[in-house]
View 1: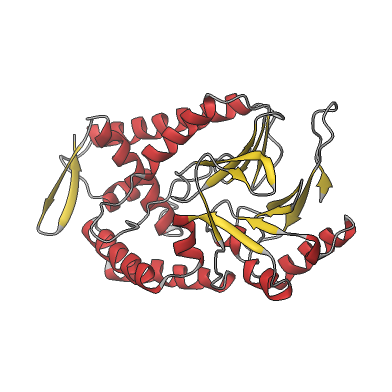
View 2: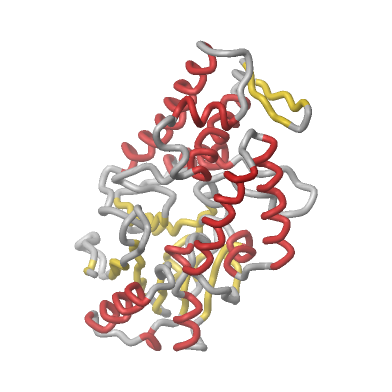
Length: 331
Protein backbone atom coordinates (compact mmCIF):
# COMPACT_ATOMS: atom_id res chain seq x y z
CA UNK A 1 0.00 0.00 0.00
CA UNK A 2 1.24 3.50 -0.69
CA UNK A 3 0.25 7.02 -1.43
CA UNK A 4 0.82 7.60 -5.12
CA UNK A 5 2.75 10.56 -6.52
CA UNK A 6 0.63 13.18 -8.28
CA UNK A 7 1.20 16.65 -9.69
CA UNK A 8 2.79 18.73 -6.93
CA UNK A 9 0.70 21.82 -7.61
CA UNK A 10 -2.60 19.99 -7.09
CA UNK A 11 -3.76 18.99 -3.62
CA UNK A 12 -5.01 15.49 -4.30
CA UNK A 13 -3.99 11.99 -3.33
CA UNK A 14 -4.68 8.41 -4.32
CA UNK A 15 -3.89 5.49 -2.02
CA UNK A 16 -3.16 2.10 -3.56
CA UNK A 17 -3.54 -1.31 -1.94
CA UNK A 18 -1.59 -4.39 -3.01
CA UNK A 19 -3.90 -7.40 -2.61
CA UNK A 20 -2.55 -10.96 -3.01
CA UNK A 21 -4.24 -13.34 -5.44
CA UNK A 22 -3.80 -17.09 -6.05
CA UNK A 23 -3.47 -16.47 -9.78
CA UNK A 24 -0.35 -16.33 -12.03
CA UNK A 25 -0.93 -12.61 -12.70
CA UNK A 26 0.10 -11.89 -9.10
CA UNK A 27 -1.24 -9.20 -6.73
CA UNK A 28 -4.11 -6.94 -7.75
CA UNK A 29 -4.18 -3.21 -7.04
CA UNK A 30 -7.18 -1.41 -5.63
CA UNK A 31 -7.32 2.35 -5.11
CA UNK A 32 -8.88 4.85 -2.73
CA UNK A 33 -10.07 8.14 -4.23
CA UNK A 34 -10.99 11.18 -2.14
CA UNK A 35 -13.50 13.95 -2.75
CA UNK A 36 -17.03 14.47 -1.43
CA UNK A 37 -17.06 10.70 -1.07
CA UNK A 38 -14.33 8.16 -0.40
CA UNK A 39 -14.35 5.70 -3.28
CA UNK A 40 -12.69 2.30 -3.49
CA UNK A 41 -11.82 1.12 -7.00
CA UNK A 42 -11.86 -2.72 -7.16
CA UNK A 43 -11.32 -5.15 -4.29
CA UNK A 44 -9.56 -8.51 -4.67
CA UNK A 45 -10.40 -12.23 -4.76
CA UNK A 46 -12.46 -13.94 -2.08
CA UNK A 47 -9.65 -15.44 -0.04
CA UNK A 48 -8.77 -15.05 3.63
CA UNK A 49 -5.31 -13.81 2.67
CA UNK A 50 -6.75 -11.10 0.38
CA UNK A 51 -9.29 -9.98 3.00
CA UNK A 52 -6.68 -9.68 5.75
CA UNK A 53 -4.30 -7.78 3.44
CA UNK A 54 -7.05 -5.36 2.41
CA UNK A 55 -8.22 -4.62 5.96
CA UNK A 56 -4.65 -4.31 7.26
CA UNK A 57 -3.62 -1.84 4.56
CA UNK A 58 -6.81 0.15 4.97
CA UNK A 59 -6.22 0.47 8.73
CA UNK A 60 -2.54 1.23 8.32
CA UNK A 61 -3.51 4.24 6.20
CA UNK A 62 -5.76 5.49 8.96
CA UNK A 63 -9.13 4.33 7.61
CA UNK A 64 -11.82 1.89 8.66
CA UNK A 65 -14.04 -0.06 6.31
CA UNK A 66 -17.03 2.12 7.24
CA UNK A 67 -15.16 5.23 6.07
CA UNK A 68 -15.59 4.07 2.47
CA UNK A 69 -18.77 5.41 0.86
CA UNK A 70 -18.80 3.48 -2.41
CA UNK A 71 -17.02 1.02 -4.67
CA UNK A 72 -16.35 1.39 -8.39
CA UNK A 73 -15.80 -1.92 -10.15
CA UNK A 74 -13.67 -1.79 -13.31
CA UNK A 75 -14.80 -5.24 -14.50
CA UNK A 76 -16.23 -8.54 -13.35
CA UNK A 77 -13.13 -10.78 -13.11
CA UNK A 78 -12.89 -12.41 -9.68
CA UNK A 79 -9.48 -10.98 -8.76
CA UNK A 80 -11.13 -7.53 -8.90
CA UNK A 81 -14.64 -8.31 -7.65
CA UNK A 82 -14.26 -11.24 -5.24
CA UNK A 83 -14.20 -9.32 -1.95
CA UNK A 84 -17.28 -7.22 -2.71
CA UNK A 85 -19.77 -9.50 -0.94
CA UNK A 86 -17.60 -9.67 2.17
CA UNK A 87 -17.14 -5.89 2.21
CA UNK A 88 -20.92 -5.46 1.85
CA UNK A 89 -21.51 -7.92 4.68
CA UNK A 90 -19.34 -5.86 7.03
CA UNK A 91 -20.52 -2.50 5.68
CA UNK A 92 -24.13 -2.83 4.40
CA UNK A 93 -24.45 0.89 3.60
CA UNK A 94 -21.65 0.90 1.03
CA UNK A 95 -22.85 1.38 -2.56
CA UNK A 96 -21.47 -0.58 -5.50
CA UNK A 97 -21.21 0.85 -9.02
CA UNK A 98 -20.50 -1.16 -12.19
CA UNK A 99 -21.25 -1.16 -15.89
CA UNK A 100 -24.49 -2.90 -16.91
CA UNK A 101 -22.57 -5.71 -18.62
CA UNK A 102 -20.42 -6.26 -15.54
CA UNK A 103 -23.58 -6.36 -13.45
CA UNK A 104 -24.80 -9.50 -15.26
CA UNK A 105 -21.72 -11.43 -14.20
CA UNK A 106 -21.18 -10.21 -10.64
CA UNK A 107 -24.85 -10.62 -9.76
CA UNK A 108 -24.61 -14.11 -11.32
CA UNK A 109 -27.82 -13.60 -13.26
CA UNK A 110 -29.18 -17.14 -13.64
CA UNK A 111 -30.65 -16.84 -17.15
CA UNK A 112 -27.53 -15.13 -18.47
CA UNK A 113 -25.14 -17.65 -16.90
CA UNK A 114 -27.12 -20.64 -18.23
CA UNK A 115 -27.16 -19.07 -21.70
CA UNK A 116 -23.44 -18.37 -21.38
CA UNK A 117 -22.60 -21.97 -20.48
CA UNK A 118 -24.64 -23.30 -23.41
CA UNK A 119 -23.06 -20.76 -25.79
CA UNK A 120 -19.50 -21.75 -24.90
CA UNK A 121 -20.25 -25.49 -25.09
CA UNK A 122 -21.43 -25.01 -28.66
CA UNK A 123 -18.64 -22.57 -29.57
CA UNK A 124 -15.88 -24.87 -28.30
CA UNK A 125 -17.40 -27.91 -30.01
CA UNK A 126 -17.84 -26.15 -33.36
CA UNK A 127 -14.23 -24.97 -33.25
CA UNK A 128 -12.69 -28.39 -32.75
CA UNK A 129 -12.40 -29.02 -29.01
CA UNK A 130 -13.24 -32.48 -27.66
CA UNK A 131 -15.89 -33.21 -25.05
CA UNK A 132 -13.16 -33.89 -22.49
CA UNK A 133 -11.49 -30.56 -23.20
CA UNK A 134 -14.80 -28.71 -22.95
CA UNK A 135 -15.47 -30.36 -19.58
CA UNK A 136 -12.01 -29.31 -18.40
CA UNK A 137 -12.71 -25.67 -19.26
CA UNK A 138 -16.08 -25.85 -17.52
CA UNK A 139 -14.47 -27.23 -14.36
CA UNK A 140 -11.97 -24.38 -14.42
CA UNK A 141 -14.84 -21.90 -14.74
CA UNK A 142 -16.73 -23.48 -11.83
CA UNK A 143 -13.59 -23.41 -9.65
CA UNK A 144 -13.13 -19.73 -10.47
CA UNK A 145 -16.58 -18.97 -9.06
CA UNK A 146 -15.31 -19.95 -5.59
CA UNK A 147 -13.37 -16.68 -5.54
CA UNK A 148 -16.45 -14.43 -5.77
CA UNK A 149 -19.94 -14.62 -4.29
CA UNK A 150 -22.93 -12.96 -6.00
CA UNK A 151 -23.24 -9.27 -5.17
CA UNK A 152 -25.97 -6.76 -6.02
CA UNK A 153 -24.88 -3.71 -8.00
CA UNK A 154 -26.60 -0.58 -6.66
CA UNK A 155 -26.03 1.77 -9.59
CA UNK A 156 -24.82 1.41 -13.18
CA UNK A 157 -21.88 3.23 -14.69
CA UNK A 158 -22.38 4.82 -18.10
CA UNK A 159 -19.72 6.01 -20.53
CA UNK A 160 -18.96 9.70 -20.11
CA UNK A 161 -20.58 10.15 -16.70
CA UNK A 162 -18.81 11.71 -13.72
CA UNK A 163 -18.14 9.45 -10.77
CA UNK A 164 -20.75 10.32 -8.12
CA UNK A 165 -19.04 12.08 -5.23
CA UNK A 166 -15.77 12.21 -7.20
CA UNK A 167 -16.86 14.58 -9.93
CA UNK A 168 -13.37 15.21 -11.37
CA UNK A 169 -13.20 11.55 -12.49
CA UNK A 170 -14.86 10.55 -15.75
CA UNK A 171 -16.09 7.04 -16.53
CA UNK A 172 -14.91 5.63 -19.86
CA UNK A 173 -16.38 2.39 -21.19
CA UNK A 174 -13.33 0.56 -22.54
CA UNK A 175 -14.40 -2.95 -23.59
CA UNK A 176 -11.85 -5.50 -24.78
CA UNK A 177 -10.39 -7.33 -21.81
CA UNK A 178 -13.99 -7.60 -20.58
CA UNK A 179 -17.20 -6.39 -22.19
CA UNK A 180 -18.21 -4.20 -19.27
CA UNK A 181 -14.72 -2.92 -18.53
CA UNK A 182 -14.51 0.74 -17.50
CA UNK A 183 -11.56 3.01 -16.82
CA UNK A 184 -11.50 6.24 -14.83
CA UNK A 185 -9.93 9.37 -16.31
CA UNK A 186 -8.96 12.55 -14.47
CA UNK A 187 -8.42 15.19 -17.20
CA UNK A 188 -6.92 17.77 -14.83
CA UNK A 189 -4.32 15.35 -13.48
CA UNK A 190 -3.96 13.41 -16.78
CA UNK A 191 -4.35 10.17 -14.83
CA UNK A 192 -6.03 6.95 -15.94
CA UNK A 193 -7.07 4.23 -13.51
CA UNK A 194 -7.02 1.42 -16.02
CA UNK A 195 -8.10 -1.80 -14.29
CA UNK A 196 -6.81 -4.57 -16.57
CA UNK A 197 -7.29 -2.62 -19.77
CA UNK A 198 -3.61 -1.61 -19.85
CA UNK A 199 -0.80 -3.36 -18.00
CA UNK A 200 2.81 -2.27 -18.12
CA UNK A 201 4.59 -5.57 -17.48
CA UNK A 202 2.52 -7.90 -19.67
CA UNK A 203 -0.34 -8.01 -22.15
CA UNK A 204 -3.75 -8.00 -20.56
CA UNK A 205 -5.39 -10.67 -22.71
CA UNK A 206 -8.46 -10.62 -24.92
CA UNK A 207 -11.22 -13.00 -23.88
CA UNK A 208 -14.01 -14.32 -26.05
CA UNK A 209 -17.36 -13.43 -24.50
CA UNK A 210 -20.87 -14.74 -24.91
CA UNK A 211 -23.65 -12.51 -26.28
CA UNK A 212 -25.15 -10.44 -23.49
CA UNK A 213 -28.65 -10.67 -24.95
CA UNK A 214 -30.37 -13.67 -26.43
CA UNK A 215 -30.29 -13.66 -30.23
CA UNK A 216 -27.29 -11.36 -30.52
CA UNK A 217 -23.97 -12.33 -32.09
CA UNK A 218 -21.00 -12.65 -29.78
CA UNK A 219 -19.01 -9.43 -29.39
CA UNK A 220 -15.65 -9.34 -31.19
CA UNK A 221 -13.52 -8.54 -28.17
CA UNK A 222 -10.31 -7.79 -30.02
CA UNK A 223 -12.02 -5.24 -32.27
CA UNK A 224 -13.54 -3.59 -29.20
CA UNK A 225 -10.12 -3.61 -27.51
CA UNK A 226 -8.46 -1.97 -30.50
CA UNK A 227 -11.14 0.73 -30.62
CA UNK A 228 -10.83 1.37 -26.88
CA UNK A 229 -7.04 1.71 -27.07
CA UNK A 230 -7.28 4.08 -30.02
CA UNK A 231 -9.78 6.15 -28.07
CA UNK A 232 -7.37 6.44 -25.13
CA UNK A 233 -4.59 7.52 -27.49
CA UNK A 234 -6.56 10.70 -28.12
CA UNK A 235 -6.45 11.67 -24.43
CA UNK A 236 -3.70 13.44 -22.52
CA UNK A 237 -2.50 10.70 -20.18
CA UNK A 238 0.71 11.09 -18.21
CA UNK A 239 0.20 8.34 -15.64
CA UNK A 240 -1.64 5.02 -15.66
CA UNK A 241 -2.50 3.15 -12.47
CA UNK A 242 -3.25 -0.42 -13.51
CA UNK A 243 -4.86 -3.41 -11.86
CA UNK A 244 -1.53 -5.24 -11.81
CA UNK A 245 2.11 -4.25 -12.02
CA UNK A 246 3.91 -0.93 -11.71
CA UNK A 247 2.69 2.58 -12.37
CA UNK A 248 2.97 3.37 -16.09
CA UNK A 249 4.62 6.68 -16.99
CA UNK A 250 4.99 6.05 -20.75
CA UNK A 251 1.28 5.71 -21.54
CA UNK A 252 1.37 6.30 -25.28
CA UNK A 253 4.26 3.88 -25.77
CA UNK A 254 2.46 1.12 -23.86
CA UNK A 255 -0.80 1.71 -25.75
CA UNK A 256 1.06 1.55 -29.07
CA UNK A 257 2.80 -1.63 -27.93
CA UNK A 258 -0.56 -3.29 -27.34
CA UNK A 259 -1.91 -2.21 -30.71
CA UNK A 260 1.26 -3.46 -32.40
CA UNK A 261 0.96 -6.77 -30.57
CA UNK A 262 -2.51 -7.36 -32.02
CA UNK A 263 -1.17 -6.85 -35.53
CA UNK A 264 1.97 -8.89 -34.92
CA UNK A 265 0.04 -11.90 -33.54
CA UNK A 266 -2.46 -11.70 -36.37
CA UNK A 267 0.40 -11.69 -38.91
CA UNK A 268 2.05 -14.69 -37.22
CA UNK A 269 -1.23 -16.58 -37.38
CA UNK A 270 -1.70 -15.66 -41.02
CA UNK A 271 1.83 -16.85 -41.89
CA UNK A 272 1.17 -20.23 -40.26
CA UNK A 273 -2.04 -20.58 -42.22
CA UNK A 274 -0.20 -19.67 -45.44
CA UNK A 275 2.31 -22.49 -45.12
CA UNK A 276 0.05 -25.41 -44.23
CA UNK A 277 -3.21 -27.03 -45.20
CA UNK A 278 -6.16 -25.36 -46.85
CA UNK A 279 -8.30 -24.85 -43.76
CA UNK A 280 -8.03 -24.95 -39.98
CA UNK A 281 -10.21 -25.13 -36.90
CA UNK A 282 -9.36 -22.91 -33.95
CA UNK A 283 -8.09 -26.05 -32.19
CA UNK A 284 -5.79 -26.88 -35.12
CA UNK A 285 -4.24 -23.44 -34.82
CA UNK A 286 -3.93 -23.68 -31.03
CA UNK A 287 -1.78 -26.78 -31.50
CA UNK A 288 0.35 -25.10 -34.17
CA UNK A 289 0.83 -21.76 -32.42
CA UNK A 290 1.22 -22.98 -28.82
CA UNK A 291 2.25 -26.66 -29.02
CA UNK A 292 3.74 -26.86 -25.51
CA UNK A 293 1.29 -24.61 -23.69
CA UNK A 294 -2.26 -24.87 -25.03
CA UNK A 295 -3.32 -27.92 -22.98
CA UNK A 296 -2.55 -26.15 -19.70
CA UNK A 297 -4.69 -23.11 -20.45
CA UNK A 298 -7.24 -24.20 -23.04
CA UNK A 299 -9.65 -21.30 -22.57
CA UNK A 300 -6.85 -18.72 -22.68
CA UNK A 301 -5.30 -19.95 -25.92
CA UNK A 302 -8.70 -20.60 -27.48
CA UNK A 303 -9.54 -16.92 -26.91
CA UNK A 304 -6.13 -15.82 -28.16
CA UNK A 305 -6.44 -17.69 -31.45
CA UNK A 306 -10.12 -16.96 -32.13
CA UNK A 307 -9.65 -13.27 -31.29
CA UNK A 308 -6.91 -12.87 -33.85
CA UNK A 309 -8.92 -14.81 -36.41
CA UNK A 310 -11.68 -12.26 -35.77
CA UNK A 311 -9.15 -9.52 -36.52
CA UNK A 312 -7.92 -11.22 -39.70
CA UNK A 313 -11.51 -11.79 -40.81
CA UNK A 314 -12.36 -8.13 -40.20
CA UNK A 315 -9.32 -7.17 -42.31
CA UNK A 316 -10.54 -9.45 -45.12
CA UNK A 317 -7.49 -11.73 -44.89
CA UNK A 318 -9.27 -14.93 -43.83
CA UNK A 319 -12.72 -16.43 -44.31
CA UNK A 320 -14.63 -18.97 -42.27
CA UNK A 321 -16.86 -21.78 -43.46
CA UNK A 322 -19.12 -23.97 -41.35
CA UNK A 323 -19.77 -27.51 -42.58
CA UNK A 324 -21.05 -30.49 -40.61
CA UNK A 325 -21.20 -28.33 -37.43
CA UNK A 326 -17.48 -27.59 -37.66
CA UNK A 327 -16.09 -24.11 -38.31
CA UNK A 328 -12.92 -23.85 -40.39
CA UNK A 329 -10.86 -20.85 -41.44
CA UNK A 330 -8.96 -20.45 -44.68
CA UNK A 331 -7.05 -17.76 -46.55
